[in-house]
Length: 404
Image 1 (tube, one colour):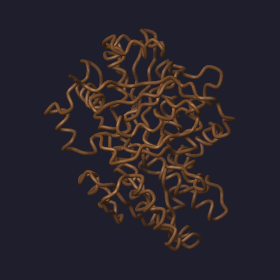
Image 2: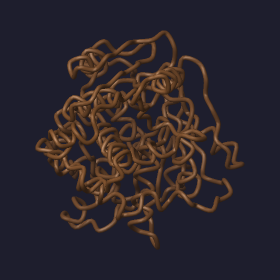
Image 3: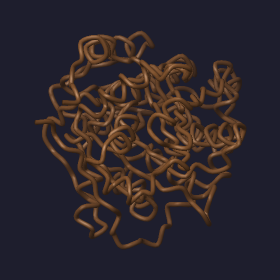
């Protein structure tokens, strides 16, 4: 008997919404300007899956394919690199618009700023992004990974010149380890998208960096005649990506926002549990957080993002691993005529969910609640490509995590 998808509507009391302006269009524009200064920058593709939309009974289905981001196979570098730039600007008393790639790699920057050591915890993609950005900008990076981390992801981080370890603790404990080490290091700074009391500035900058992806997607939709998506599905670990995407689109369409669906791995569904409780307070999931969706295996929510989600998300969904595996197979072997999207375990869960909602009446209650039908224009984000080749083959070639 397969595990069921669980969901809840958002019946939490609204807060004063003071964090929504952090994802204002002007703030995201600063991040996009910074990213565009990199010689490696290009807008990642928005895959238009017309055949899949028709098959599922939707008006349109669009997948932002982050496997092309900076050659790193994942979106995470957007947040870490912008946070580094904001940190350096802040230390120097300068505006972030001055922190272009050319300036940051210049002798002048080295003379004026010097060097810092950026500490982080990661399941893979965030750490690789930090390591890559630190290497490109002449800075140092120290990366801690939780137990069970993929050897392939470890090697990818090490190749970027970072000091990297796999620890015998879970992700949230790795975050605490990175923070403690940064506090003891001269010019040490922790770069993490998990916000907690007293550590909110850098996670905010990371979220604004993620906004580049949402901004690109909005532009690309307009270019194909979709002024506003009717539904946006976005996955969540600590919730920073979800808060960034939902915050951006809420600011872009303040009077008529899309319906927003937050999607988590069953083993680490802290946001879903907070929404289920309904009192507006976040919840924490502890333990080993074992799931194939390694990038979503986070049990302690970002409190800034949580505040945005409690005010703007329509539904919170907790998905077993088979949902992600199904999404990987559907994107990797598409309907004839549609582009192929190579999506990793954390990248494909929203595809698996939309298929489960549309293909049968098993989850008709959620489909009806969201108003998904043949007029819906649905936007998904494939946040990573094939970042763990052995796991990818087991799912696509060997049929691991079957639907039935």
